[in-house]
Image 1 (tube, rainbow, N blue to C red):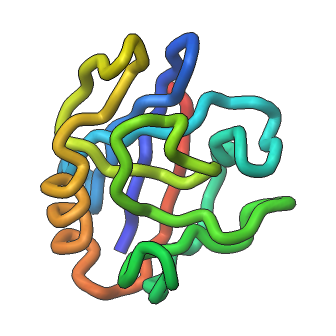
Image 2: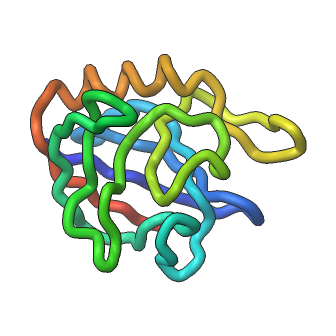
Image 3: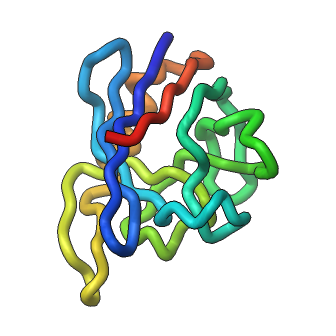
Length: 129
């Protein structure tokens, strides 16, 4: 299965749209691009393999593998980019929480993402638009 994450930048975070086999699944929120610095930057655009994993903190989820200089990059529930350490949060929509760009309804978007991934590994292409 193939997934594409189409990203765009704001002044404080990275927003995106996630597709599986060209069908829209959900929006996303990530940290802003800060040269791939560990824990404070989104990961570089590129092609990655994603595999299902059982995270001690987040439970059953997907990990983005072979990110240069990074480990434990997960898809997980979060509403604010500041809650992330390089991971990707599926979200339903965007809004503002405490004067910060935010993803809304992350739990429902995450559930939709997990259903679309269907327990199978997938290829992820991340691009800037």
